[in-house]
Image (cartoon, rainbow, N blue to C red; front, top):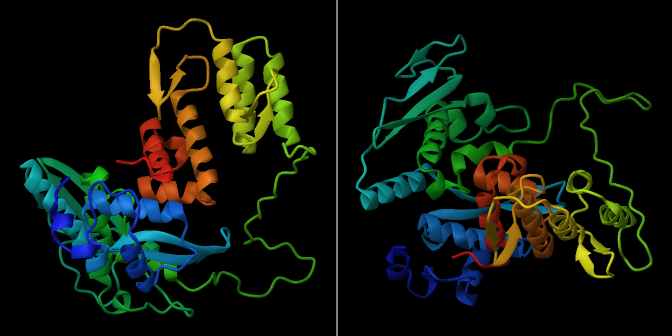
Length: 370
């Protein structure tokens, strides 16, 4: 990695080999508005992101912004920069790689679907489109105005969204296109223009109050906590039942079915007692049990965080193993909104991610990222 971060910033400079914030850096971050509600995982991920993008939080090139999340019951912190930060990263990558880089003309669309290369109307455009050219490849993205506009309690557009709506939605489209063109360098950090809608006023969908006894057609069903019987030894009885079923399984296919049940029920990180009275996490036990029942397979060993996991076509997949390790690391780090943080960082849900992406986040959470 470049020494640029080391050369600037003095005592606050972020070293490429740094694995945790120094006391001085932490003090400045707290002064910038990062509260004590921030988790160790969020701080660790932010440090890794600053190192990867080479954006300096102490020069206000990148921020860690907290927004209250009702589901998490606390402020959840998200890395954020401006469109200029994206451009700095893109130009730095191109300078280092010797590739070519450019843009096609920005386009705006009206409500009827007609595109133009200059927005002259009084009302905001319905969408904007930006195409980034990297080494001859086109990376296009369209941003819909309604999905990004920042509004107040009465639906009034706030700040630059009221004064310069065409420019704001164009910045969102540019950010989307740049993230497509530079997925590794820009993954996990969003622009202020993209995140402005996260500060919109509370949900205003109800036109009248729901009357007592009347079902609310707009309401989102509240997930019901799974009822788990916990034995006196602190282990989850449903998890133990699945472990016992795996112990009695006659073939690997049956263990795979048990693994799917445990995954769906969120029980993979529960502690169980194995048939030989060993205490293990359910997910780890099911993977091991599946290997015991596996037929010899031509596939080789895959090294995951210094643990050798035998991959077999019929057993838990490499992605299953990586997801189990990621969720275990998140639980130990106290990260309660793992799925949201992963999708913010990588642009897709965990269930659609590859093993490599899950391992990368696991290393961030465990502090072993390079």
